[in-house]
Length: 186
Image 1 (cartoon, rainbow, N blue to C red):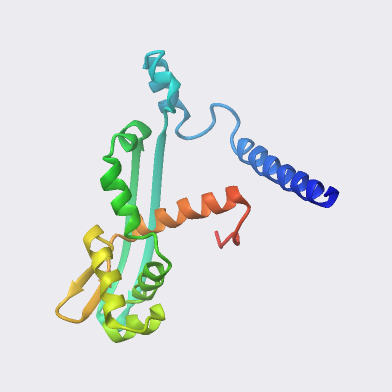
Image 2 (tube, rainbow, N blue to C red):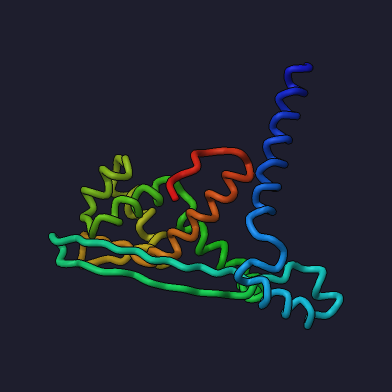
């Protein structure tokens, strides 16, 4: 019984430590988005201030070279969007988009496509599936939300790399909060 209490206390201390470290990342007012968010907060009604007011900035830079596919490139993007705009998204549509990524098999399929387009047999192997029916089920779900594109009858490629990366950032954040998983690189 006491061992359980000590283990739970240690877990709580570790969580508090992680929260305190996050709070120390920027001094008050020094965050790059602080000025914009504070201005929105000051303009908001008392009722509106009960909800989080903020902005999310996503800055990404990807580079790739796939000589066999004659593909070379850099993908650059920066988006800043208000939390209010994100919260205004249709819950059904947002959940549907997230569900397109929210399966271990789909993550493996997408990871396999990061090195270039693949045929169904290659994806079947990469995903560890036994039937093409299982594979096509996942590919249809991913295609519907815009994560993969079909090239001809039997070839697939990845799409929306930034959305995929941001979904993994969200997953990593939740895993860290729960004290699970590896930190990952970077």
